[in-house]
Amino acid sequence: MDATERLVYVRYFYAGFPKGIGFSFVIISLVIIEALSTYAQKAEWVVIPSATRNSVSEYVRRRRLTHAAYDLFHSNLRIVDIAIKYRFESKEAFTRSFKQMFSITPGKFRKQTDMKDTLFRTMEKKALDEAGLKHLHLGPYPLELARDAEPLEERFPLVLISHGTGSSPFVYRTLARHLARNGFIVGMPEHPYNNRNDNSLENTIKNLIYRPRHIRMTADWIFENEMFKGKLKPNAVSIIGHSMGGYTALAAASGVPTSFPHEAPDGKPQPIKVASEPRIQSLVLLAPASVWFRAEGALNAVTIPILMLDAEKDPYTPPIHAQIILEGVADRKKVQHKTIENAGHFSFLSPFPEPMKAPSFLPSQDPPGFDRESFHEKLQSDVLDFLLIQHQGVKHKKSPIGGFFCFNDISS
Image (cartoon, rainbow, N blue to C red; front, side, top):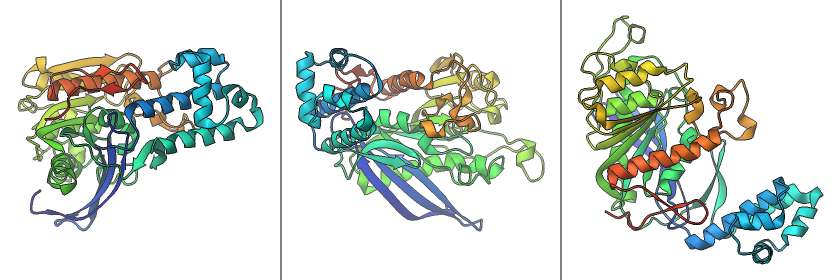
C-alpha cells in the first residue's frame, strides 16, 4: 500500500459451510482514502474457510432428501425412481428416511397439491436448519450458508476474483463457493467506482491504475489479518478475472498496459504504471479484455501458468483479445486456451435467479441453445482442476455421494 492510501474502516459478515466439504464466507468492506482526491473508495469482497456441526455424510443425506422432495414437487417421476436417483437402497428405505426427516411420507406429500409449494419451502428450511445452514442473500442472490462457523485447522491457497466493468463480485458466487468447498480461501473485491452501483471511473486512466492496486491491497489485508493467521499458504495466490477483470489479472501479474487516447485527459495514449502482486502463481482468464497490452513486450513479464477461456459468440471481447495474450506472454506453452462453443460474453457469470432473467437484462442472456447451468458445472470443475494442479500438483476426486468433492490432504 503506497503513501497515498490508508485503510480506515473494515466490516465483515461471517458464515460457513459444513466441515469437510466446505468453508466459510467472510464479506468484508474496506474504505480506502485517496489523499490526492476528494472522495473515498469502498471495496467489498467475499473471503472463504470453515465448518458447522454435522458430519459430511449426514449433511449429504439431508441434501439428497431435500432434492428428492424437490423432484416430488416438480416432476412426475415414480417414487421408486426418485429413491434410486438419490441412491437409496429401496423405495422403503427412502420412505423411512423421508418420513423421519420431514414427518410425512413421500406419497402423502405428493398428494398435497394445494399446499405443495408451502410444504416444500417448509421442508427445505427444516433440512437447512438441521444441517446448520440457512438461506442467506449476497445482494439479490440466495446461498446456503451458516453464520459464525469455526475455521478449519488447515492452510489454504488464496484465490481472488476480479469482476468485469460495471459489474459485481456476487455474479461469480457459484464459482467462489465451489472453490471454497474444495480447499481455497476466495476473495471477491468490488472494484470502487467501476461496479454496478457506481461506474464513474469506467474508461479512465485512474481505473486502469486502481484495479490492479485493489488486488494487491486485498491480498495484503487478508495475509495480515489475524482472522486468517495460520490459514493461508504463503505466496500461494491465484487471480480469476472476467472481462475487465482479465485486464486486472494480467496487470497485477506484471503486465504493462497502455491507455487509449479517449481514456486520458490530453487525448494521448500513455503507458500505465501499475501495482503488480509478486505472490501470484497462476491466472484464470474468462473472456479477458486485453487490448491495453497490445504494445510490443507488454506481457513479456507474465511468466506464470494461465487458463484462458473465451466465448465463441462474444461481441465484447472477440478473438483478438485472446490472440494478444497468446502472442504476448513469455511462454505460450504455459497458456491453456479453449474457446467455449456457442457461449456469449456473459455466459461466464453465475446463472441468475429466474425473476432476474429478461431480454432487457443482458448479463442474464446467452446465445440461443446455450445452457448456462450445465456449462457452469464444467467450468467449476475445469477451474478447480487447473488451480489444484498449480498449488498441489493433483486433480480433484469426485465423491461417490452427492456430487461433492473430497481431498485426502489439503494441509501445507
